Structures are given as C-alpha cells and as structure tokens.
Length: 98
Image 1 (cartoon, rainbow, N blue to C red):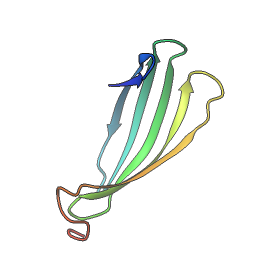
Image 2: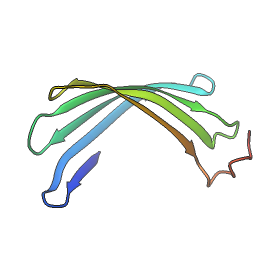
Image 3: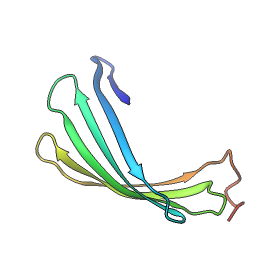
Image 4: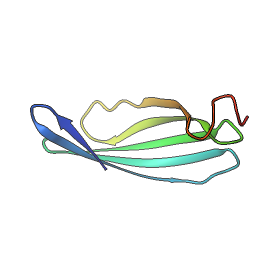
C-alpha cells in the first residue's frame, strides 16, 4: 500500500498492488493488479504483466520488462512500457557472481 502526498492537499490517493508469479529457471513471469483510490475522482485498475529475469548466477543483478495496461478509470487509457535493471550491491560487487 502506497499513499500519494501532495504538498498543499496532504494525502490524495492510496494505491494497492497484488501479484502472482512462479519461477521457471532464471525467469519469473508475473501478473500484478494495481488499484488506485483517490480521495477525489475516479478509481483506477491496471494490470501489469511482466517478466523478471535473473541475469547473474548469484542473483544480485536482475532485469524486468513489462507493461501497465489500464483496465478501469478515466479516459483516455494508454498502455505504458515499464523496464528496469536492478543491482543489489549489498550482496556482491557488480562484476562478481556471473
């Protein structure tokens, strides 16, 4: 659960996300659903299909590629591409564990 804080208005919305995924080797395909409940205006529901890939043997470097697909909410609803690269530097240096 995440709250959205606006400087002049205080908390303006709450967001919830729930997901399911299962590891298949180094890849974890997932599907998440996210609800945003604003204090004023329409509620939104989005689906987030994505794939998480473990890039290093140690697992401290990973990448994810997915999309945000708005299902319910104000028009126009446009899908967005989401991607990130993650390095957990507390586990190991970047060039170790490949």
